Image (tube, rainbow, N blue to C red; front, side, top):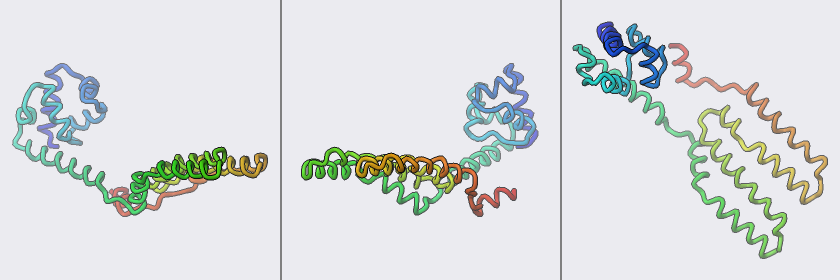
Length: 211
């Protein structure tokens, strides 16, 4: 943003009796952002320009009051388009699988299997364990939808799987005592992932760091 527009923003703010803090509060942004605009170190995006115009009761043309207003608006729109492109990145294969999992009627399958075991073999008691597969299934599907590998690993249904293993061994084989050790895997798993797993830098992240 050029210095003329920066000075214009300072002038309008002072004419309206607003400090940088007060203006930032009205726009819902930080005071540092206002300061950067007024030092011509950054440009407000389209939404903030419109908010400023509405706040000061004038049009965008009157707000900018410069021949470069179209340049600023175009730059803000380009930045917005870039942000949209980043959000709309093509989904990975894992994310596609995760979405398919979440759309699949898994609860219906679980209910049918439970009723079959109940009515056909009168196994209502141990068969209820199958319902524990529901949180495991959906947490797994949700984890697959996460793009970051580390965040995906941290979202895996490790506690639910540990609980299911513990109950199965306890109820079906009466092995409550030694099987509780499986719960020690939960903190160990999260500690290992959080402490030692490092994301591989993609080309995008490398280019951003170079900038």
